[in-house]
Length: 557
Image 1 (cartoon, rainbow, N blue to C red):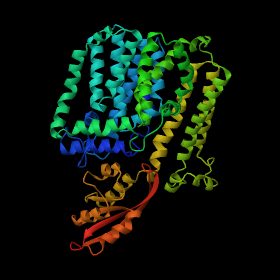
Image 2 (image 1 turned 180 degrees about the vertical axis):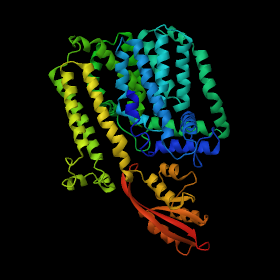
Image 3 (image 1 turned 120 degrees about the vertical axis):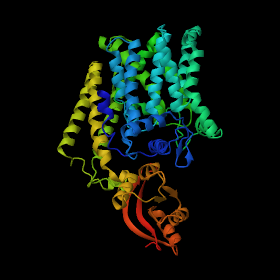
Image 4 (image 1 turned 45 degrees about the vertical axis):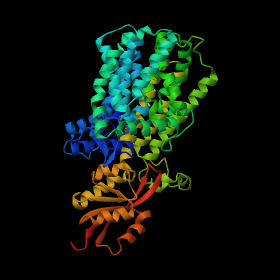
């Protein structure tokens, strides 16, 4: 129920997001349209960066829940929602292997309330599914490591690895391998690995993965592995890809935000864990986190969700500290925080929390927010008198006052070493942010989702009977909402496409309008302007103007 309270707001109301979510959803939609569940395509372009597991689960979800409405995004998100819940519940069971009650509940709640997992649970992509596969596999691994050898633990380990391979290739096997390697080095013992029954385990992984891999290799003439490994994975290891190159330390700083409000407890928990590093619990959790984290910090290409498979272990480390030290009053000298440490922790945590509140109130200024304002943030200062953050509705004022009050209460409880109570209060802050922002604020910003606006306008004009040619605006969500036959073209190609259809729509950015009209001169096409919309392309971070035309052959008219 706690997971649903975090993950359901906005799941049905936020339109498809560019670019990854829309690409995943569109490729899954094309599987349903074509009946080809082996080949993965976005329009005619192969999508061989990731295996087919995510697309299959999305296609199954849509076919089960909304088979007649393939352009609704919410059924594509259901696998991510369920995977996030499975990951949280799996973290509970995994923590119970190490901790006495209520350790499992604390770890699960910390993970469930992290902004990073809340975001991934709302998106139709592979990362929540990857997290679930890692948690399932790690559960089987740690149970076996602690001499609980059974067919169920074996199935969790190797089934989780096989599922992870079908979701995102080598990531899950890599996390598990590094964990096994580091634990073996620390213990100076490798014989325990035989308890994992690797030969039969690899056979199970092969049974899960090889049928599709062989099929796609044959169908793609060997292009899948070449594209997946050579054109996607290898470039990310060598340099920053798609402007995502960032220096080491990025994930460490970002954790203050993506793990909030649990980030309040990271420092004391890690301090205690380092002093307890010889225990089997911390040894295993460090083996899970540290080698993969270091590797991700070194790799040039960085995206926030890359560290998500490590967050369950961090949540368990925090829970381990709370259940072993915090409830005793934190009296151990190895744990004690000095005044400077407490002050720094508080300042950082307050700044992040108040930033969430500021973002929430800012996004609720729907009548004042414009694409130009978002594209040029410095305009906020020139229009500060117009943007009065105190002019809010009664519910927002009450919500903000409660947020600040609970922020102070959570930190006060932290100071008085009432850590479990502090966590309980801080988690309620997430509800005060998530529900209004995801359920109402973001969906109300219609100009933030031009693709859906365009689809609605075309639907109202003709019932969506005619194809769309897009010139200058080529976001994947446009194809998802307006059909797989949507043409993404430059002005010259766009005019050719219009000439090939007796009736069609043209979507033209203002920057391409003159070129488009020039190429239409003396052509056998009549155009009628339907609407112009002011919007914002958040993928490129700039305001845009889009013009929608209805085009028809002059002869037919």
